[in-house]
Figure 1 (cartoon, rainbow, N blue to C red):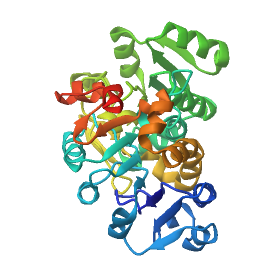
Figure 2 (spheres, rainbow, N blue to C red):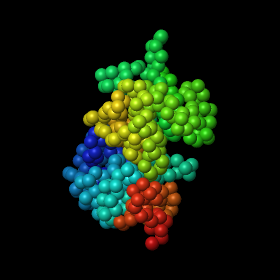
Figure 3 (cartoon, one colour):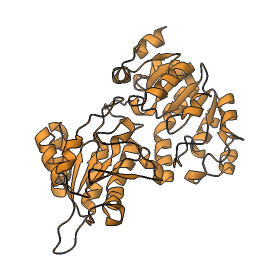
Figure 4 (cartoon, rainbow, N blue to C red):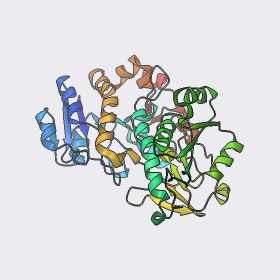
Length: 372
């Protein structure tokens, strides 16, 4: 198979879909790898590193899309990239289709087979290709939230850990999964007073057993959530419904009860965000204010630490990339139900039910596609 890796063109996106290490593995498996010139520079990988492991450098994205059987990216294809997809081509990347009807319609129209990192599963019921970026985003959230809280950025001017005689910042983390756990650990490590909310008692018990007094836990009832949001200097949204739009857990009218200059960090923004007032921003212009509350809603937070993120993502995607290349997408999905869960679009049909429900579009089961 000829595997193609174009340069990411989403604003302030510095990651790359294929590392030199992954390119070497693919070449050793007998495949060809074509990489757009400069694609790895944002993550610190020179073109020469790809050439040294047997990959070929192509001058532009058009050449990569034209020659490749499978396109491997990081972020969802932008409008210009979607026009270059063709029938029978495989796209392997993050898609986040539920809040993005325009992209969904374009991918259906392309005739391509589109496999989404964020809905691939594992034997434990986890999301192995989302997890590394969730870990990065979770660890970044308190860091960028602390910056948002600085007075010069419109925040309350509160120091995360306080100082002797002055209390620390109060942080509410909504969601106790991968993002929320890492966010809570880092925020607590910065000295903040942290409370994690979740609706799963099993998860709350795990967090309490694993972290003890490092941070607190509360059941995420509407009342508890409203109370903690009103008391917080920073609220981190870390809720995920796999493949579906994020639920809106904080309404706009609740902002009036928040402290002026409080910070919201919405890590769920890729799936539409879990605050009613959330809208996607970029690293160029990450913060905006609504009713006195500062919102940080960057849709590709891990892109800020591109080298770490790229290597972590590459480690996770490599086994699936090789399976798709070695067996072909159909045989690979037939052999692995966890990879099959990543199939979102095929040959003009939507194949992921949660996306269909979010966008009111008809879907066909992936199993029926593979049986055809």
